Amino acid sequence: MNPFSEKTMEQIAAIIKKYPEGKHKSALLPVLHLAQRERNGYLSVETMNEVAAMLNLEPVEVYEVATFYSMFNLQPVGRFVLEVCRTSPCCIVGGEQIMDYLKQKLSISEGETTPDGLFTIKPMECLGSCGTGPVLQILEKFYENLTEAKIDEIIADCKQQHAVLN
Ligand code: FES
Image (tube, rainbow, N blue to C red; front, side, top):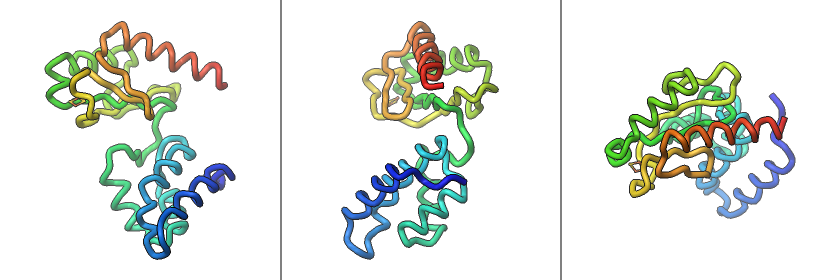
């Protein structure tokens, strides 16, 4: 496995520095986010073990956190993880239809990744934007008041980003 980049290591060091000696466990969540981003969007056991070593924790302390929060992926995912809210307020305004449309458009089911490795559909509990549902999230970006036309635009946009970066 490739080591973390210099930039990521600097960011991790800056996060750790915010906490007093012996309290480095507090850095775990932001460090896991950085680790996940650097390691193709998911946390393997090896990556979690590396994080444990960096923070002077037992590996199980990292597994406990990584398996608790739904924002961490423990299996390989696509380049774009479409996190779709499946909680009632979004469902009332069409969240289920949006999920069905996405599944049909990408020809995959929830939790699956397209064969080209570009998209994963991930059902999520409330994303905290209930007034603007249906909602989906890709990394830090929210897409709100979704319609099928907006889904088409989002998918096209992701494909274009991918083409530019490759
Ligand atoms: S219910 Fe969908 S964002 Fe809250």
